[in-house]
Length: 225
Image 1 (tube, rainbow, N blue to C red):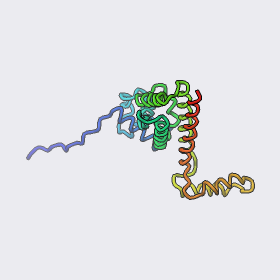
Image 2 (image 1 turned 90 degrees about the vertical axis):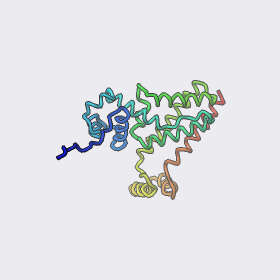
Image 3 (image 1 turned 30 degrees about the vertical axis):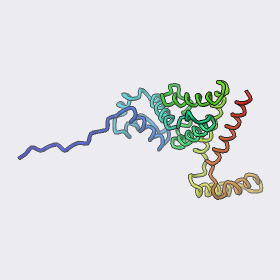
Image 4 (image 1 turned 60 degrees about the vertical axis):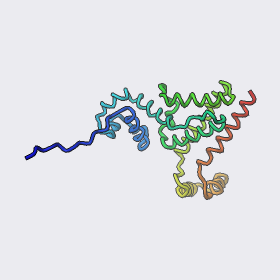
């Protein structure tokens, strides 16, 4: 009788820093950053938590790497584009990245050990502004104004209780307004009925309007210095 052979085993995907970070980002996307722990991350990867420390030294290094991955998803300003087009495209790409990873909003500007994608991103934004005629102080003003708007809008978008679809928005708005006496809050009632409850309303459409105001204002400020 021929000796029994062991069934072929599927080779296990080896653990790597990239795999650890991808799994951490996926966990944070699903459950929020507060729910992320090395133990839960190890469980998601099918390994002991201690083995993760071969790839990230601690929780701070894990967060640094996760934030760097999000920055890596944001399109860099195109070198051939004028500064206003480049900043508009970068802002929209950043907003979309933060919609995919809302947990990152509070972390993007807090890390003290930025990774290569983060550094490339910031260098490219400053370079685009400088190429567009902004002095160093004006580039700093522009960068600050744009990021405050992008992150602030992304935070509002992530936390407003209006739902993800037009139908959900209408339902939530109607429930909220049913609790509000129209005669006591006439302007709020008018705004809700004539704007939010109109067909096609999408809060996200406000992003482009506000962004254009900021870009136009930055252009005027640049030209006056």
